[in-house]
Image 1 (cartoon, rainbow, N blue to C red):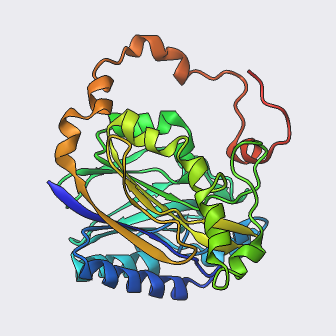
Image 2: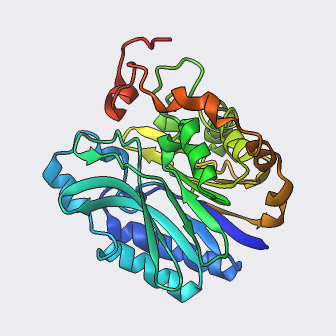
Length: 321
């Protein structure tokens, strides 16, 4: 079975849900014209992302919506039905007063699924989710979802694979961020983004370098290869409240090979075919059959060095072995 998939990167407008949903609708129409069956948009692209840092709770609540009864989820479901397409996009969810960084997947038959980010650090008012999200899709395969930092912990990708995911949706807002790790990402001068039309080469060099693609290539294909899953990486692009997201939308097969990608400094959609027949004998799935779970008990035990998501993300303290 072959699935035509698309990963979309775009620069959202912070707090302007209607404008962001309009852009999502435009891309969905473009995707439909290219026979896309699965369209993946970035993390929190409906509500906006980095401007939430430091925002008071009442302001976040004004952005947040219920799922599935909120207008954004209803909009995604209408698009999915109109284009006979599975569509995923991120927003802030309000579930009976608890706020989450959530990702909604709308199916063309009117069904829906939501993943709540397991390691939410955007605000003290946003809670982390407590469960994995793997489900049977109308596409005829199983989809899994991990949001941004969820993907950086190998345990999350492995658990998603063990729950049967064939395709991992990996929506992000990353690249170009201030990192304490000297050989991870780094800050990109926003002036390069603002001057992208006059000098696209300068900003695209950053997107292709260690602050963007170079960093992703150290670990992202391994999530697909080691776990025997296809991976659809979608990311914001452009200036986002003082930082510059690097886009780098890409599709990765279950061998960790890049099917299609972009380093364009702008809104862009990349499409490609996910040939699910490759799953049967791919390396990750063959190796997983040789697991020895009795050796891994320590993985499920606390070490005493665990921090909550906000502390782990922003702590200046040195790490312990």
